[in-house]
View 1: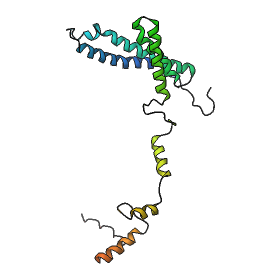
View 2: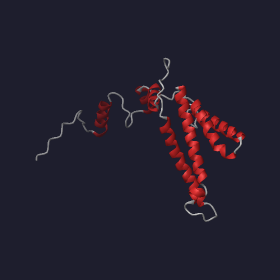
View 3: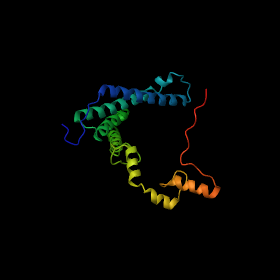
Length: 200
C-alpha cells in the first residue's frame, strides 16, 4: 500500500508490453539482418535475411521480449516503478543475448553487465545529461519561476538602458508629444479620432 507522499502504482499489461517490445526489437533485428545480408560476399539472395542471418532476428526478438517482460513483471509484482525493474529486465535480456555461447559464465556476465547499465541509466533519470532532481516539475513552470525570481524593476532597467523601442516608463506618451512639439513644431493629439466608416 502506498504511504502518504507516494504515488499509487498502476499495474501494466505484461503481455501487451512484451509483444510490443518484441515487434520493435524484431524490426531492428530484421533491419540489422538485412544490412548483414547485403554486405556478404556470397550471392545468397533476398531470402538470406531469414536463412543465412535469421538467427540475429530471433536473438533481437527474444532479448527485447525478455527484457520488457522482466521489467514490467517485476514492477507489477513489487508495485513500484523504480530502477530495479530495468535492472531485472536487463539481466534477463542480457542473459538471453549470451545464450548462444552455451556456457554459464557469459550468460551471467552479459546479464550482469546489461543489468548494471540499464539500472544506472534509469536511476540517473533516463538521460545521458545526468540526474534531474525533480522529474515531476514541468520545464515551462521552472523557467517561469526563474524568470519571475530574477525580474528587475522597470525603473532600474530604464535607468540603465534608457527609453527605447518596447521599453517605456510611465508618462512616455506625454514626454514624446512634448519632444515632437519642441523639435519639429508638430502638435500630436493625445488620442486620435476613430476612423469614419466607408460609404458603401
